[in-house]
Image 1 (cartoon, rainbow, N blue to C red):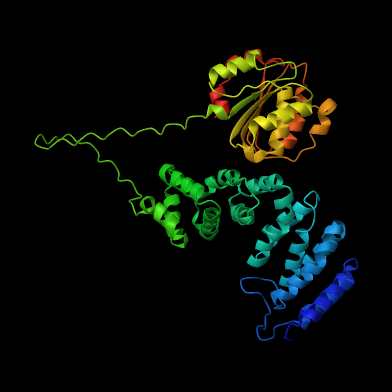
Image 2 (tube, rainbow, N blue to C red):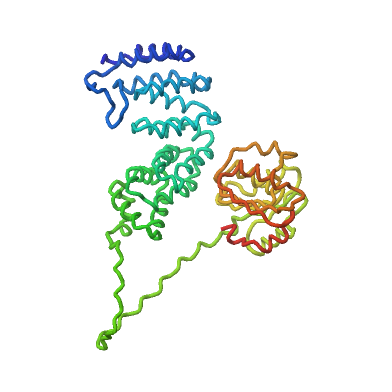
Length: 459
């Protein structure tokens, strides 16, 4: 392998980028560059990457990095051609060409409908660990940054309870988002990964180690809280076993915090002794076991619940007063003016505080929807009562990015103000974590209000 002359390499990469729109010529010149920089001291007879079934040129990473830098702007400006070139690079079947294909996918806008099918299909076919990681990280770069809620919805699919084979993919995809200092919605990630930590399958030990260490570096207190909660409440014996195995890889302060919960303990419960007819009258009676205390549910912070009334209503409406009686201390403000004025009033009230539970009725439901889609990190839960999610006259406000905030919609089957089907269509587009409750009631939901378990709905 010749020594890398950066000036010459830059010229070679620039010339290669000139053939971006001519795939055959591009591949011809790419092969020449890769062959030029072959490291023959590392080349084997089989010429296959370790732990992989892919052929490799043994090209130094600096060469691929320079090529990627030259292709970046062309790929971003011409996503259609980038996708076609990525397909050709992938079909070439070499380690280096598949890494370049993965990079090109990461420069394509997340709105491109063919992007996710490519990533999904290629991830399923690939065995090489380096390419797999590139598909789950580099290829999802723009989606993570530009449409984080769409990205989290994808991760939820990877981590679906019935898709255990894709759990490793979901964890690896999440790690770059956790390390991104600009990403603030860590509570959503903790909610997503906690069930996986509880299951703790042995096959995921390395992935779980990477996940927990990354979470700890991003937020030590939240990570410690989650792990202590999991270890102290789970009935899955595998959780403690796996955590004990991987804990030596944790940062020392985290090991110290978990030490007591991870100490060896008998994991197989002894079988109860079968009773017999013999009673030893001289035996000292055993003390009665103390009853196990039930964990108390965390008390709801009513000051973080807000009710948004409808267009012709106020804080003195029937629903507002009933909510205030059920949840003393909750916020029930008045809103006046046009929709934009009401939104400005709402944003001033909510400020930058987080963990809000927003209840929105009719036009208030539209307000809650718009705020939640714009500021998902501030909302813990959204409750929509016959929300005015209507194309006419509010379609211009509903061009929003989908979010994963837990959302419950309650709608009357005989609502003659907001058509159920139209509102539901918008809700299903905007909320990936959606529960729909249809009741036999009209727009004002007077009867349903008395029958529904609001503590359960808001918890």
